[in-house]
Image 1 (cartoon, rainbow, N blue to C red):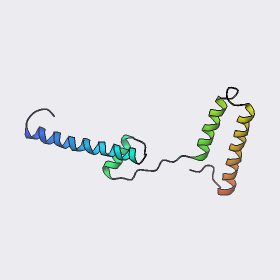
Image 2 (cartoon, one colour):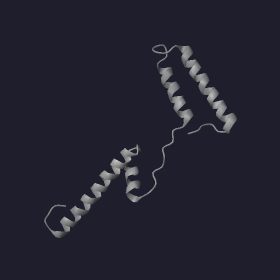
Image 3 (cartoon, rainbow, N blue to C red):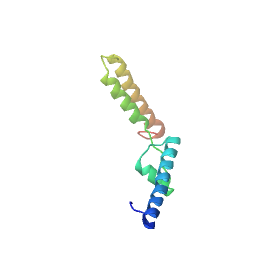
Image 4 (tube, rainbow, N blue to C red):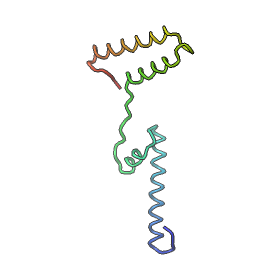
Length: 105
């Protein structure tokens, strides 16, 4: 807020304090290796719990196999890609057999 009135000075002081708190929340998120998002900053400022990000095994495995398939005949032989797909299927079957689930974090 521009101006030299007491209200303007008080508002600007409050905004400076809030800005410092946001910078501190940003530093803390980086320090604890969490995703830097406006929602996570807001949760930190409000004292709420930041949810742990879940990375699902089969989702990552599928992404890997898709990347391998894209590089087939360039960097990887078709047989290699086929073996990765077989490994994916065996892992999926194991999760279903052992834990009765389709994916795990």
